[in-house]
Length: 180
Image (tube, rainbow, N blue to C red; front, side):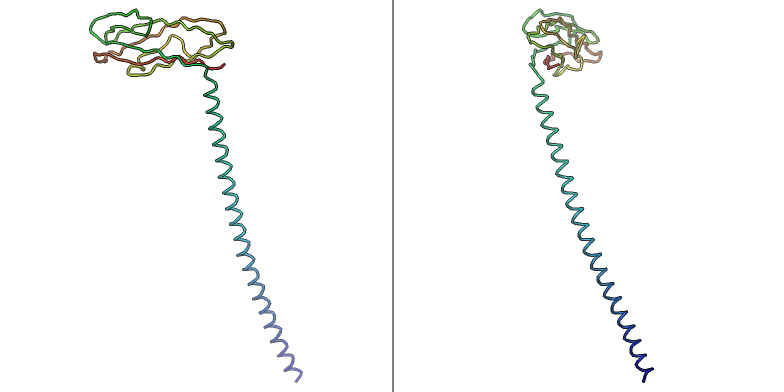
């Protein structure tokens, strides 16, 4: 009898241990599942936060650049430009626009403009040719500083490539006065 009771209690002890072990495994699995879901939620929240942060930085940078570039320009003056590629040479003395006259392929022509500075502060001047023959046009000096009350004469040069076709070419010359 004593032996049988001992065997029964041993069986119950083993079953009890197995039951406890199984319950502990289930708890651990539940903890792992719960903690992995929590980690996923945290990653999702972190991802949303980072996306929001990057968006705010991008929008702020864009607005700052827009404000800076619109506020930094004092004035933009535009001049019409004309050039005739021809087999003869000719010139135009108009004061209303920049006409380089008739230029032969491989030749060049220049015009002088005078910049008058009426602002209280120094400005940075940028010369920007636009239009059909903008690649042929350049200024003797570009991106320079003009002090308050200073005037400057500047040569604008059109160099016609050798392979240019005969015809009339038009464009514009922008003179941009920026804050310095």
